[in-house]
Amino acid sequence: MQDITLSEEQRQFRASLRQFCEDKIAPRAAEVDRAGEFPWDNFHACVAMDLPAMGVPAEYGGVGADHVTQAIMIEELARVCASTSLMMLISKLGMIPVIWWGSEELKQRYLPRVASGEAQASYCLSEPDAGSDVASMKARAVRDGDSYVITGTKYWITNAGISDTYTVFAKTDPAAGHRGISCFLVEKDWGVQVTKLEEKLGVRGSPTGEILLDGVRVPAANRIGDEGQGFYIAMGTLDRSRPTIGAQAVGIAQGAIDYASAYMRSRHQFGRPIAEFQGLQFMLADMAMRTEAARGLVYKACTLIDEGAGPEELSMAGAMAKCFASDTAMSVTTDAVQMLGGYGYTKDFPVERMMRDAKITQIYEGTNQVQRMVIAKRLLK
Image 1 (cartoon, rainbow, N blue to C red):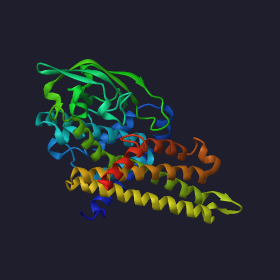
Image 2: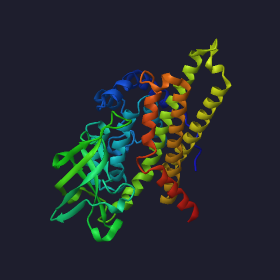
Image 3: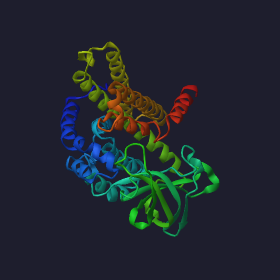
Image 4: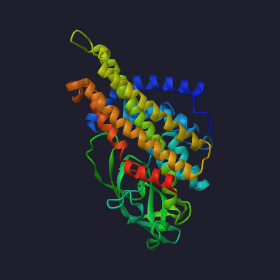
């Protein structure tokens, strides 16, 4: 594996992106959370910086950035606004199946639109009764000539109602269990209905909802991969996207550390800055150590993707990065609230928002209990 020390170009990218985030994204973060609405101004600002193009190959209109650089992007956005970082995460997630398993026609038709910001994408795997147990999904895709007719409900869909395309998994052979799942790229205008939007604890600027496909007709050319390959595509996609969830968690944790350390220097108690209290110093040191360890796991997993590692190695590294980083984010943000005392518990200070945002990183793209199962299974194989 290559050294994961950042290149000078990556360091410069981080510096320029941090300035962009401080100038354009951070000032809106509290209002985005309060309003609970998709921040189109933030999205357009990201488009102007070519951020949606980062994860799209250059031959399809993207930047074709390596995965470590993509992680830096997500990390810096999440450091100031987790909702905005999720905009960039979700369209890439929706397009990973196209990038890796889609036909040349699908790549040419959809990837440039996502890269330019003209379109956004969602990933539709979970159902009301099929979350971690993907094989239990009930959505059906029935072949009808040159089309498939898809019927079913998908739940916990990030960017529901905002996205222009939906990568949908449905069973083409219900009797075959997980081997009967196939994958399709469905355009919103073909009949995708948003039937419910959730009122959430965190990442409130990113809509999450239930979508209904009621006999939606999809051209056979919009199937991604072969019939029955959907489960393999779904798992392969998550192996490649979990490290960036880890990057989001690292960014949230870093934002909490930066704010808490500044607060410690400015807040006085008993006639001196609380930064001089050893108990708080030790808390801050532990927060920083855990976050840096999480960052290392994330960058390692991203490097493995770039190096073309095999599925078992990707699965293990992605699970470790996502699980450790998200647990770290939850711990660090909770400690940051504690360090601010009563102030930390109010919405006047950003650490309570960071703590709420951190929680979802332990849940989506596979709960951390599932990640531990994946890790243990690999170790005991």
